[in-house]
Image (spheres, rainbow, N blue to C red):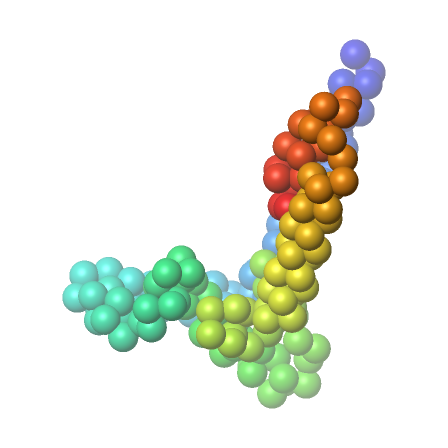
Amino acid sequence: MAGRAARLVLLAGAAALASGSQGDREPVYRDCVLQCEEQNCSGGALNHFRSRQPIYMSLAGWTCRDDCKYECMWITVRLYLQEGHKVPQFHGKWPFSRFLFFQEPASAVASFLNGLASLVMLCRYRTFVPASSPMYHTCVAFAWLSGG
């Protein structure tokens, strides 16, 4: 019972710490996102947004709300810099300029290379380890589930 209570206290403490990044909590950012969504993400304005959104952005799942968050993030960053403050994090990440539909292109390239390396190793494993080996199918399944 004491272990359960301790876990609840830890969970409550973690929830209190998870209140968001400094940029998320900034009233300027929050107001900007709300105003942007009201003006751009409903009715005819949403149709206008969708008509001018590049196809690769919509295929990647970028929504009007995502675009509002991105634009408001940079508005907030400019205000912070004008006031001589450090650049805040937003949603647990540092602000990065978007390239195509990647907001963090270096991270996307690293993830792609990691997936490619996992695929190469899976192919090598399947080539050199007989399918009748113990745990063969478990290893192959784990490789697929973990991103290979």
